[in-house]
Image (tube, rainbow, N blue to C red):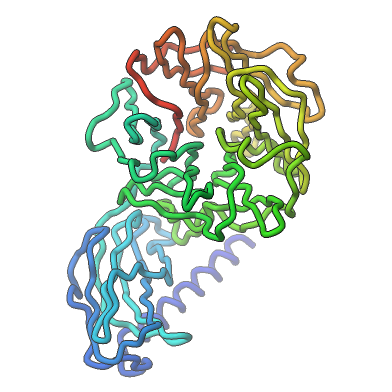
Length: 444
């Protein structure tokens, strides 16, 4: 049965490729949207970010450009990968031509360039694109809120190499950072025209991309094992709904013959007003975390006042405020653990909870798990304690059973891992007295 299905797929792909090849080779059969046309760089190998010049007579104001990408996979069953049509970024448009920018994150590809006008498409030329894939391994990044940079922290604890620093001075309030896998950049919150909005910092270009542009505020980001970044965003009625803001981010994940972005879909659940007595300004210091799959549950935190925080749980279409906690900060966190292997291979579970963070003279920071949503977790014993103030927590998907913490004690800042299986803190990977980091995050 499986062999029959695969044979049918291969036959379909072969026929599609045949028809496509025939259509591309016979230019006289295609609709002529412009005349005397071509691509100045046709046949050349270009790099990501290079400008391609398309020329001709008869371009119209609403014309757009699309790419079809093909690449070698090295797989015998599916030797050629394909993605298309992909909308091109237009750098300049004129009556006699369009300039487009080649994308990042793609594998070495053979690229067909098309002019699109409403429902019609015309092949303009072909080029080659050099490798633009981004790092697949997870790396640790830190937000420096004083120098206004994003730094990569190396495995040996080193930081601030010029090639691993991104300037964020144009958005100095960028905070609550999170990573959507394979995007090679960070999502976070920043104000635009006085309204808090989610943005994406592209590590390939250093450019900012707004992720939600309706003009209404964003309550908080949400992250977790779903490999996506979501946000609670406000609607016209003042209620908040959960939206997958990372669904359209380009991901460098081409170890497969065809692909889609990991994030898909958009709105999850319906809109809900905030609980009485809480305002949007009390949220957003830290990203929330997804706690469950089958029954949507999200952990958030709200600052009630100086030294007081409230855990806020979101279940479908409703926010639930829990008992106030006295702390310097209340930080939702998550990490994955490997379960005993089964016949189908390794399986994983996600653990979620809160860090009740305080300075060393107030007892330090305590880590609690929220295994049962209805349980009064703050009455339980913490599973871990750190004699310092926790500033940020992040998890590396490639290292189940661990999470990484940025903390401060007596003026010394430390980045260290906690090993769930061993039940102990590991040796610090980075220690400094002049550190000005306000958050860390694992990303690729």
